[in-house]
Amino acid sequence: MKSFFKTLFDHKFETYITRSIAGIAYLILAWCAVAVGGILFLITLSRALTFADAGSFLLSLVIPVLTFVVVIMLRLAFEASTALVAVAENTSKAK
Image 1 (cartoon, one colour):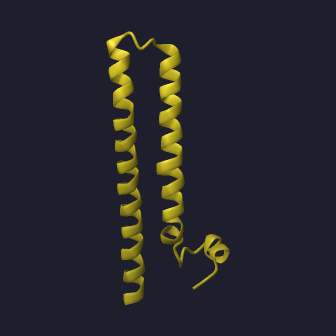
Image 2: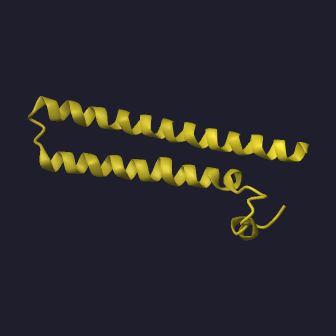
């Protein structure tokens, strides 16, 4: 197996780095970035609206659900990309 940096600068794309960095990228993107974005959105919403309004209260309840849906969609995208790379690796070995 090539080292990470040799694989990173492989301009012929003979080896893939997707499977080696997918877990770290998923952790950073899906959990950290989405969680921080959801929290910041809640903070912004609480400053912009008063919670006496029923609509803003319902919106503040919907935001965590939407954040969870975004995490699920990112997980599906990462799984699809790693599955595609796995198929490509297995296809190139079969030649």
